Length: 355
Image (cartoon, rainbow, N blue to C red; front, side, top):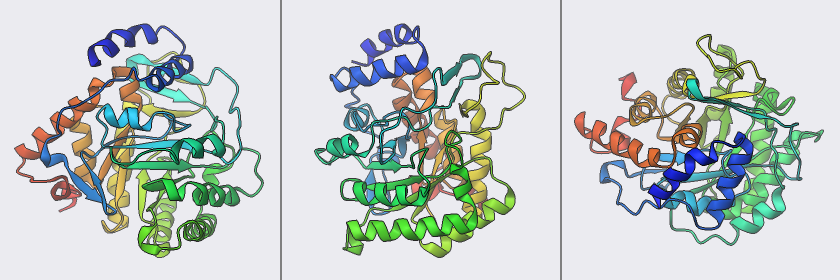
């Protein structure tokens, strides 16, 4: 199946990126996706938040906005998958075209704007899932026209909490006006406390509640990073995803679409995200598990993120550009690097850069 998919990939790339993505999702729903039946190296197995991961390499939100193919992507070799971002109400997102490839830069820019069909169909799919293939995360956001954005997060978290292994509040997409302002200290604290109450309403048993993770932007000032760290520590949030796409444009970009507005993802984002992972790990004293996300395209990248403080890592753009074989390649390289350096497990390497 991997060979067939590799042959189809160049043909899919002939189409505009968003159309190509929709074709891919459709193919996966029909069972045409790759399957990685091989056993992951035991050195890659880890546990975070009481959840077991066969490997630490996950699929980030954005690929499967409607939770249509989480199990297909777990079968493809990911250690965990995250669906969304889902908003309470359906919305069409920003005007097309809104996704742009920067092939020579191994990057992409998108300004999708949380397009999707809303909570109802998302819930309809995830409530029917049979657990067991690997941890599943639900990523929630707010509708563009919602006046009280915090209420949207309450609605989303309360709805998906019974069906997800972990929850993510996405407050850092650059494509919804005003969304990133929720990272300001007072607003962030209010949002987190209200969302934690929403999770408690959904699942009264404290021991059964899925962990709550906050996804932050890479474009933060030092004072903003410190505020976020302090709020995370004082409110009892379970984790951080570091980081979302960036509004920065590194000078070395060469693609014709480099000046398009939206969030930059892919290889140019990696050094920015890596520095932020290390910074947030130190600011939280290593007490808050981090999912490292942004530009990972190799086992070496994943290893660098882990050594900087990430307990898990995520990717999307690199897979879209290189194909699903990348997943097993990253895991094989990561296992080799861990063993080479004498680590018996992922946990032994987390944050080792800071020792």
